[in-house]
Length: 296
Image (tube, rainbow, N blue to C red; front, side):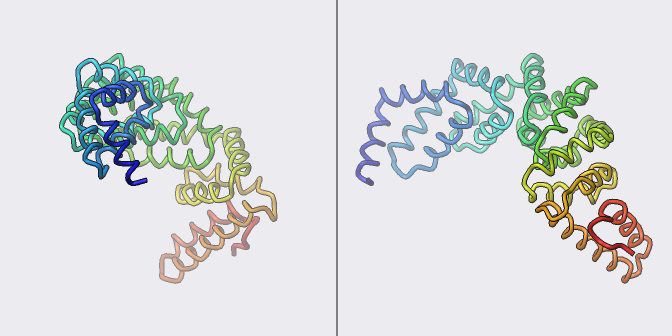
């Protein structure tokens, strides 16, 4: 197999095959292209290192860079983030040039608008991954794109669409998305976070999220509850989950364990002199988890 590896590597690196692979690469989904380039970059065979250089140079031509930028606008946000993150760190100077070229293309008004429209329709975890990448991206054009998309997401129409998506999303996706918004540097995303929380804590939406949480894996509900219980503004959703949980279920076990942990924290706070914080925690436990733990 090592001999076969060497043989195939040599064949792929010929001028004809390298050209054919470059053509295929331009048309490939960006996530797959990033994985392929990353492999070639670290490959042991000298022929594959040569192939990497050849394909990198071909991708960076003006025509191919334009084609890749067009693909990027239509790609799922999480795949685009994977591709951009790879280009940002790539060793080949041609790929660094390609990164700059694509970043500039994506930041144009037309493409930024298209990406914002795509972002609103994306699964919340994919959207969070994309926003987190843009927030930390090196290219100033991508920082500009981040600001543009954040502003678009915060509009009344898009905030409503995201709220509707949040109610139907798996709670592990909702947790990841709310964490992203809460830690965002953008004031628009901070406002979006506030708007979403007000909407999601409505009695009907809280009930819908609770239903989704209790239909999914117990460990995902546990992750969301651990996040939510530390944020009093999510109490309506936390209480809705606890109130609707069936006794004896895996979800009930999760809630019981969380309740006992939090009760111990309340007792420790009281014992070490922070009685007001201890009472506040006990009051919260009584409100949220009264069914699962006896709170004095």
